[in-house]
Length: 251
Image 1 (cartoon, one colour):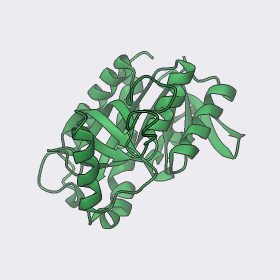
Image 2: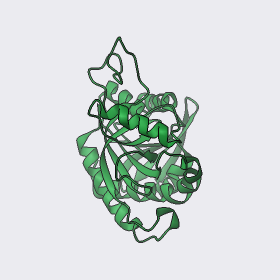
Image 3: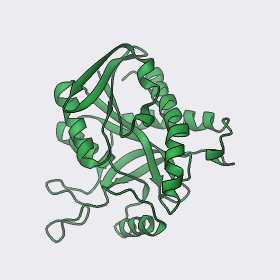
Image 4: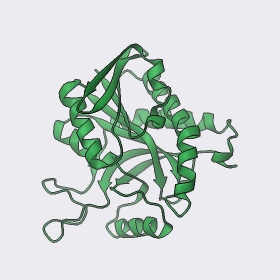
């Protein structure tokens, strides 16, 4: 069963392609994919680019033309949940589009044509990613990298929200949290691609899950933290977690 690993940025997959056996580059729909094997498992690596439309296009291309049966997204996100800090990892249990609003025709956040606002991730993949996240954060606690601060990183699991905005002020971040909490949604992280991938996978009936490294607190310092963190920490996390996922679980 072929697994696809998607990320938005090249740095979020740095080093993964070098681990593949029998690597082959495939170009399709303006995207460059690398397929091969890791720990005996067939694997495809792909970059979505930034934003929900780019993510949906890439996911559809993978499913239609590269015959993948499961998808995992790995990359960075802003932490907006209580206790979710820089260097932590959030495993998505569900996704929701925080900028979807078709009121009064449909309830807020609900994608027209679907019965609920949130798209659930595959429970089995979520469980495997939680194990990978816990192993990664335990290892990261020994790195002593200044970008991780003095605290030990933690693994979380819960709701992740997506929108076509880079959330870079405390005011914008708090507004998203406050609005969602009025409807009993408790978001842990905010990013720009996952909900679109979740919707496409729901349409095709394919298992999907995601793991997000927290690069910033989606506040006024987010634009400062983001570039260095992606380069130095997020790529290392992704390499560790994907390798663990494939080494310890038969997909």
